[in-house]
Length: 303
Image 1: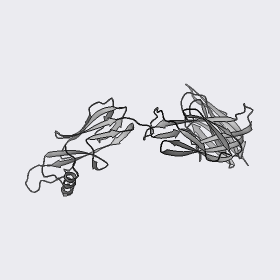
Image 2 (image 1 turned 90 degrees about the vertical axis):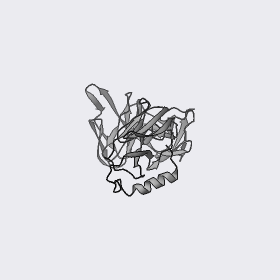
Image 3 (image 1 turned 120 degrees about the vertical axis):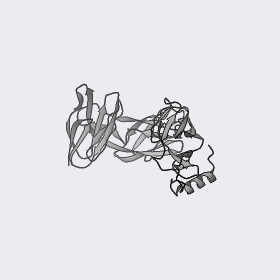
């Protein structure tokens, strides 16, 4: 069906007058259907570069180009290949994989069709951690565990909706203040080693194509480790309570193969990636609670 700007403007103008029968005493019937995206007529071929949600709606007109009132017709949505994307009765499309499908809106047998050509494209980079804690050379492990002098974080390439995907282009990381820490990326730029130089707060600039973001880095000289393990009985936090002095970091260690969310009261250290660590510096005295799943823990910070 044609999507000329003049035709649409005229249709929407007369549609503002309502969907009555114009005094003829007859029940209006569906004459035209337009698939809309963001209140504009969708192109007959729509290129989609990200998996996930897409929202469409439909404009239904009678023979006089008047917008019909919902409820005076039956509107249905369908896709030609549900393995590529699905659609519900409200026009919400969920794209699952690359491919080409037809999206169809049908009102009382009158249809409009849009071809969706889906080719997922990497446009962003995402770091799972919102804060990276690094350690000065010779940093003290206050719990007697083996000292850690470098940490790693992983950056993933994603599409515009945040879905991870592979791509050849490299992610680059730059220390905004390189006096605090150094960065040793691998060739692909996705797993990055950070070596602290001196205590302080800094940031890393993450770049992937035209996309830019920053990640906070806290370099500390002392820390304690809190680990957790998962069993059929649930999540066990070890230790469930820990006491530190202000300015000390807690290093949350995840030995599992799945990511786990760390939720704190008034702070956030998670999510903790698989087989990785996530840190949090506590600068203010007080008692701070957290949960991993449904399992609680407590951090007591002394002045």
